[in-house]
Structure formats: C-alpha cells, structure tokens
Image 1 (spheres, rainbow, N blue to C red):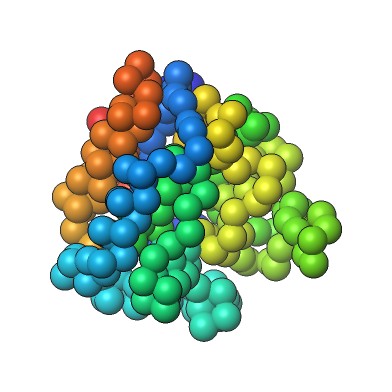
Image 2: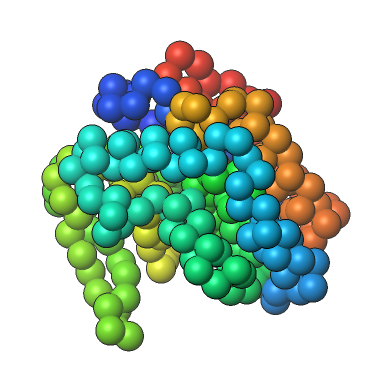
Length: 232
C-alpha cells in the first residue's frame, strides 16, 4: 500500500479501544453535488438515530477529547458537529459529490469520517500527539491564517504540517477534496461501543459510493487498531 497512514503508540495509550479504517482511492472522480448525493444526505438526516450505538459513540468521543485537554462542548468531533447540524436544520449542505457521500455515511453511522486529497500530501498521514510546534493552515474572518496547535493535542499531520486538528474536529484547507481530486484518502474512526463490523460496513458503503462516481476506481483498505494492522 503506497499511501499508508501510521498511528503513534501514545494514541492507543490514550484510547486502547480506538480503531481506524483507512481507504485509499486511485483513479477516482469527483463532481458537483448531484441528486443522488442529496438524497443520501436527506436519508441520513432522517435516520439520525438508526444506529443503536449512536449516542453512546458520540459520548465516547466527548470523553476522548476531554482526555487530551479539548473541550467537546466548544469543539466537538466531526460526527457530533454534523449530528447537531442535522438535528437543527433537518438537512446538511451539499458540498460536492464525494464530500456529500462521506458526510452522509458519517451521520448514518455516528462515525467521524475524513476525506483528503492524497495528491496534496507531503508524505503520508500520521496520527500523533502534538509537540506544540506544528502549524495548521486555516481561515479566520475570510483570510488565510496559520495556527500553532497545542501541546498534547491529537493531530493528523504530514511532513509539512497539521492536516486535521483535535483528532477529527477541523480539517485543514491544503488537503481538502475538491472536484479536481483524483487520488483520495479516507479515514473512518471508531471507539467502543461502535461494533467493528459496523466500521467495516461503513467502509464498504463508502467504496460503493465511490464506484458509482468512478467505475474504474481502485481502492485499498487498511485496518489499524492497538493490537493489529491488516490490509483488507
């Protein structure tokens, strides 16, 4: 697997129950949002509580955030942020076909799902706790801004800097998937009590959606957990 993420041991020390499903997609295609993606979002928002572990899984993420010093009331995990918006608006905004797909899966499974343009990475993704010297490219009041992350914060990063802050709270601008992206990386992140089988099912739904958009897409899955790492 050419694009293989790594997870530092101190992440598993923080949450031994953490597991991630990495999906790398080559020869992929993205488009503007379409009716199919909008319907996926609508269904996911309608079935917010379909997953029996949903509330407990979001609570587990709140506990994980508190464990490294974050305040989940102010900066919730990505799945909870989408969940709250879906509750409030009964729908999520369309972005583009691929982002709509993984947002719908995130809401349906109460699962943090990240999508990145792998071609824009400098090296491969690493999940680690920050030293406090790493930089993060974002926007503030409509202008580009460089932030320095907090020591001990859980971050995804590459050789150039942070690609996602506070585990899965906020994605950086540099590696976002756009309609021009053809090489993509996705990470689906679970804690107990979400079943491992449900994580794999969510990954299969993501791959099915990518194949609808890109019949010739090639995907590789990698399962990462404290006691194991395996290509699926």
